[in-house]
Structures are given as structure tokens and as C-alpha cells.
Amino acid sequence: MLDVKSRLEDLKSVAEKLAIEIEIVNLNNQEFQMQSGYCKMNGKNLILLDKNISLQEQSEILLHTLKNFDLEDIYVASWIREFIELEGNK
Image (cartoon, rainbow, N blue to C red):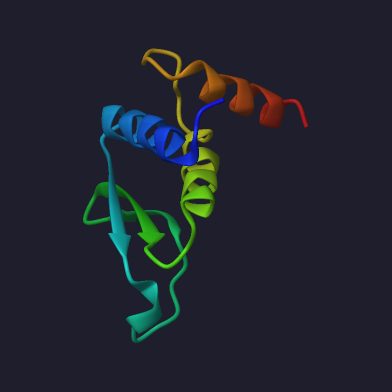
């Protein structure tokens, strides 16, 4: 079983292959309320992750974002594919 840090690295690797930037920022200090998640900014795909949430929560946000992209033509760790297939069958 992979630990959370290894899983997070796997997810970041997939995001990189999809040209999605990941920024870990402090979302508590913003002038307006923001949550971790996917957005498009200046035409770029971006995932913002709050540095104050756990690595497990960061992993879950990445997983739920990546399942919305076409992963057929890129290498994705088997545990990620299994998760996405299970989610798709719900």
C-alpha cells in the first residue's frame, strides 16, 4: 500500500502530463473566500491546493479533478485508474 506522500506524487505527475499546474497556497489569507480545486486562469489549467489541508485531502482533490480528464493516452499509476473506474461505476 502506498503512503499518502507517494500517492500525492503520482497524482502530481499525472497533472503535469496533462499540463495542469498545481499551486499550494494559503487560502485562509485571501480577501475573498476560496476553496481548493480546479480552475482555469489566463487560459491555463490550474489546481489550487490549500496548504492548510492534509495531504490526504490534497490527494482527494487531485483525484476528483483528474477523473474529469481524458487519461487514456498517458501513463497513470494503476491505483489511480482503479479509483477512477470505481468512481465511474457508482
